[in-house]
Image (cartoon, rainbow, N blue to C red; front, side):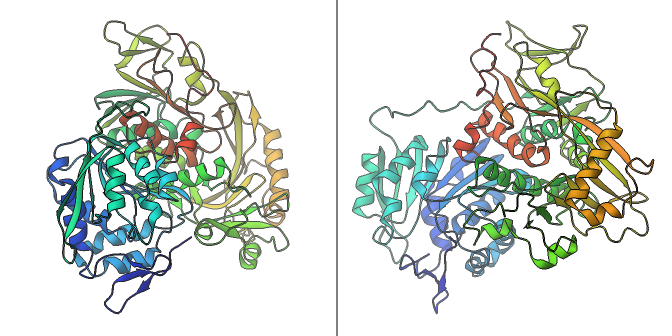
Length: 618
């Protein structure tokens, strides 16, 4: 639930819920810098590090994040990657966040960037991206203790912030402090403005050495310390970050391009191999596709995962593609063929930023006045091949086409992987190889990945005069329909797609054209009536092979660390490549570099490549 903030006469933000101010009477800027940033020894502590990971227990109005981001920008010795993970059970509105920063003009350019991404903050994780992917804010919406248990990383610095222990004891209790300690390594520095005895005692009990330091007026004391337990903490051994060097990605579709870009941003020199003569030569060559969140009454795992994915892809589209030509955040109407709304029962608040029941005007736009439908605000169409090519433009990526990778071979002497063609000739070699070749990824691993080929065919044609009756917005629900995609020489409409399991034939089929037409007649009867017959030469077909796992979720992560070290997989995006590829690439990069996860651990666990018992022998 969004926090309701009152503004006191002196401009200080105040929470009626907790009966406390968000910052001291003298303002929050000095507090953010002196108590938290400098209290953790920053920026000096992060100098020349590949990444720095900061954990904050209460995001509030985001001032600590803005001050830390500003310090990172100004520091010539800044780390390549700044992770800022912050918990907040009652997020402020974007407008209040911006108002809170208004007293500090030097922060306003950053605050405006933050405001534009602070939408749809439902319970769970939300990854916000700044500075071309070098500053990553992970907002964890929910009770701090529960949210911290959904993370796996070890923080380098901790900002213990939140309302007064007397006003909000839950964020300072021993259980929350234990969850904080679980996210620390030996030497992690902590800082806070509170020196309440309950906090000091709780931190000491959890293994922190703490001390009082000179406070910032009107407070006499602040708190600083570090994690230095006199025992060996009982927790899972932390993942060891891989040092960026050279790696090979096999596959230049959405999955391969996204993971190559994520790794290149972290300092890797990435070589992308593909059998086609141009990127996006397979299923990612779809003329246009829809980016739409999945909805369900119980807000299922797939629904939560799809929101993470839609946000991540929208960020990349906004940064890399030309709006109106290569993509469009048009919104999408979803016709509910089962007669239900599909929306969670509590669809108020932040959920309305994502999806809500379609209005009469939106239904009329599609000539579906009596239908049940919902409207997805954060949705639209994208040309996947354009996104693939844009992702591959990173200077750390080199692409090589026309190379058919047929076999992987691990050298016992060096431990590196060789990629061989069908004649056994080496194509590339690296310590890290990522399989992102869709269904063909299964052929590159002798024990076999559990992948299924799914053939899909779409129908499309150039728009003609007299087709004004076509809906003005994309529609999905029983197949999909995109009414107008701009292209050189005009615009085209597109519908489909067919769905055939265990079928690898990419030749167009008239039967599938007719099936697409029949589904369109059900989905949008008025639109179907004004289109030419689908057996007409005017209506063209495009077919490709998607790749899915047995449970229809992606495969992401190491294949088997014990027997296949350095071999990773990023595939099985199914029919949701536009939704899954970018966020799953960030998940793979986070696992590889021991970073904070871009999604809750329970979601990440559902995608692990080892959930089907992948190869146990080399």
